[in-house]
Amino acid sequence: MASHKAAKPEEYYIVVLGMGGVGKTSFITQFIQHTFTEEYDPTLEDIYKKQITVGNQPCIVEIGEASGDVEHSNLRNSLICNADAAVFMYSISSEASLASVRAIWEEAKATKEEMGTWEPFQTCLLGAKSDLEDLREVGKEEGESCAKGMGCMFRECSSKTRVNIDEPFEELVKKIKTYRDNERIRYEQMKKEADKKRKKPSPWKKLFSK
Ligand SMILES: Nc1nc2c(ncn2[C@@H]2O[C@H](COP(=O)(O)OP(=O)(O)OP(=O)(O)O)[C@@H](O)[C@H]2O)c(=O)[nH]1
Ligand SMILES: [Mg+2]
Image 1: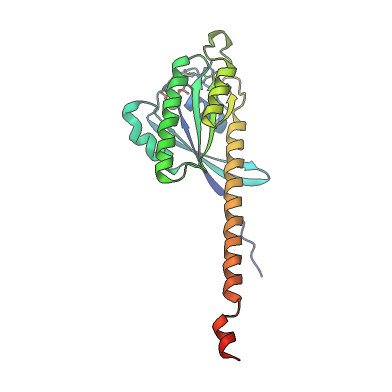
Image 2: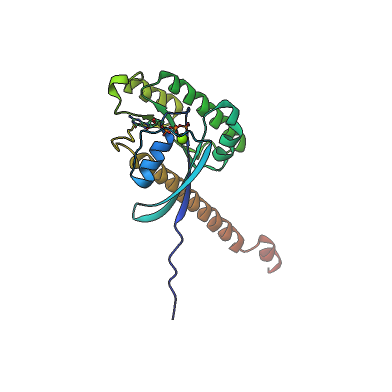
């Protein structure tokens, strides 16, 4: 009897980057566990995993969070190296966090360019804590225009009120998947072309069979 083994869900690696306290852990925890806490427990480095369904297909999303501090750039870089996509996070209540995440974006770009993998790297600029309207220091248009300059998609989110928590992950997974599918198609076409060339009768054979 033929056994139909279910295909293993594909894995997607996403890194969440940004200055200390902008809300990275809260964002990931809200995505994974649907919970939020006002308490602040700084992170050095953490990895989380969740299975989601995107376009009817099960996907495993592995999420890395690294400290945004300058002295921890090695930890951060090792996560960036292995990631398919990044969420660059600032808080709408801190202008300084936007400048900081821009510097982190430059760092990530340099790392990926050096590896030759900047082009397929999918990115999102996320303005966190959108519920703190009274404390807003970064306008939505400022965030949008910054994202445009960085070539990132853009959203504002709130982990407290669960606004735009699932969407950034789902959109990044879709983009990674599209890129991978296109690469697979390109590879299959290249293989077909090579097979066709191989099957053509050799001109030597023709010459000697006269
Ligand atoms: N009001 C509000 N507070 C938030 C939100 N997200 C996070 N916070 C609070 O901001 C503080 C820092 O949040 P974290 O998620 O720990 O920040 P982080 O970026 O992981 O910080 P580090 O791990 O130190 O880099 C905590 O007190 C959270 O409760 C939000 O969407 N709205
Ligand atoms: Mg954290």
